[in-house]
Length: 75
Image 1 (cartoon, helix red, strand yellow):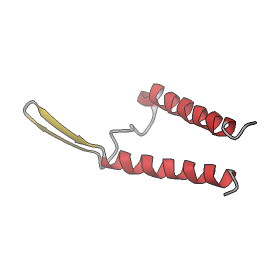
Image 2: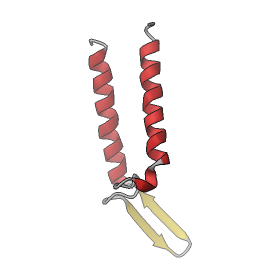
Image 3: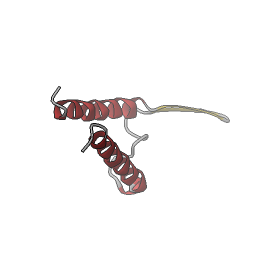
């Protein structure tokens, strides 16, 4: 396998996993984007949405994925 092959396979699997989560989103116990700590302010016709908890959760997950990928390369 080439040096580019393994990361492309991992990236494809990550994208497929995200697609499955989006497709099954209504049946999951935690609604991504509607977690406790995601702020929504509504005033008349204006809605301000700040997904703070979702951003932190995605940051932790992506950092873990990057750490695993870095460890698997032997760096």
